[in-house]
Length: 373
Ligand SMILES: NC(=O)c1ccc[n+]([C@@H]2O[C@H](COP(=O)([O-])OP(=O)(O)OC[C@H]3O[C@@H](n4cnc5c(N)ncnc54)[C@H](O)[C@@H]3O)[C@@H](O)[C@H]2O)c1
Image 1 (cartoon, rainbow, N blue to C red):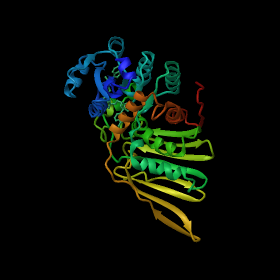
Image 2 (image 1 turned 60 degrees about the vertical axis):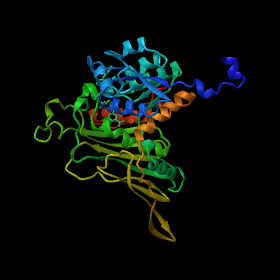
Image 3 (image 1 turned 90 degrees about the vertical axis):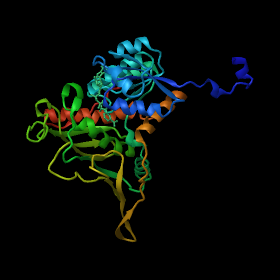
Image 4 (image 1 turned 45 degrees about the vertical axis):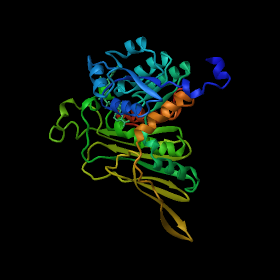
């Protein structure tokens, strides 16, 4: 066969086999991962899943149309027993680091759900394991695949805004506290900040080229989540439902961030970038918690000596963002390419998220230290 292939008789494509995928943690979002892999049967096949809740892996794999996939009650067992090419880590936030490192130590590339993890120690350990294994970790920020995210980055990177000095980002829901494992520190590590806040940070930071964060001064609140009159699961709630921070970034940029799961207000306002030549306003669509979808893009600048507003065309095309994220990961694994959303960038997102938790706890501005890996 090798000689025939060398002679060009057997086309390369004949030998292409789908990547063998394992799913670590088979709760809610694992469904979106599995459905995405199922849409590319020639490229990927879910062959195994694991969950620490006894029997859950078998039940979920069956429900999700993967009855032939092997089921395990521990990720360790799965990684020991099944030959894989890659994994999706879909467990709750406080398990992200442990599972990602275990997969890397088994020699596997990882598609890791957001937020990257909870603490900077965990983030550094992931980067160290990634370097040692020589395998990629790509972090699951699917809004990056919206055409508007790309357009915003293109505008910000074009120089049209001049020197960018201030960015406001974030958003919020009037009433939108999820339940399940999102509202307890032992599983989620944090609340709105890790659920939707990290998206609010990724969009402007990615547009700016991920400048290094230097300091953060933050507060967080839990006044809705812990109030049984406003939230039915208040007894379990011990994370933030609103976080706010002022972050200094390298390059003289100040980032103003806020994110809420619940508030007495309709919206936290748009995201905007202020430069000395122009400003860009990004009006979110829907609730205002950034999910990649845009409701308006406007450039504010001077034209012929007068303040002028120019609407910028934005896409309303419905893109399957989740599929695009999984596809980009699969392609990177198949081609030995770089991680589509690399930890070298997302460690800055994580540094801000973890920094917000520390600053809020200490009630003081803190210096952000990025561990050398
Ligand atoms: N990208 C997105 O749009 C999106 C949407 C929702 C959730 N998420 C992220 O996905 C992750 C999971 O969220 P979810 O809604 O699926 O939560 P979930 O609680 O429904 O599912 C998590 C599952 O992981 C399992 N688990 C935890 N630790 C484990 C371990 N050590 N080994 C094996 N299984 C383990 C839990 O038992 C649970 O079944 C979170 O990090 C969340 O932030 C991303």
